Image (cartoon, rainbow, N blue to C red; front, side, top):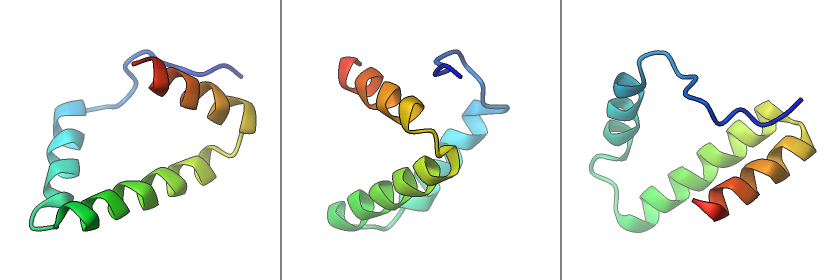
Length: 62
């Protein structure tokens, strides 16, 4: 399996709105903690260590 960097989320604008809404009213520290929890939940769901390493490298390049 390879890392998919092509658009792949149905209704990306709706997801972005939902992502912003979940952060509403949080302090910077709370928002950062939410992002960290979300990242770990999604990384666990992916589960493929090679893909996760590729994602880390891609995020660093962006």
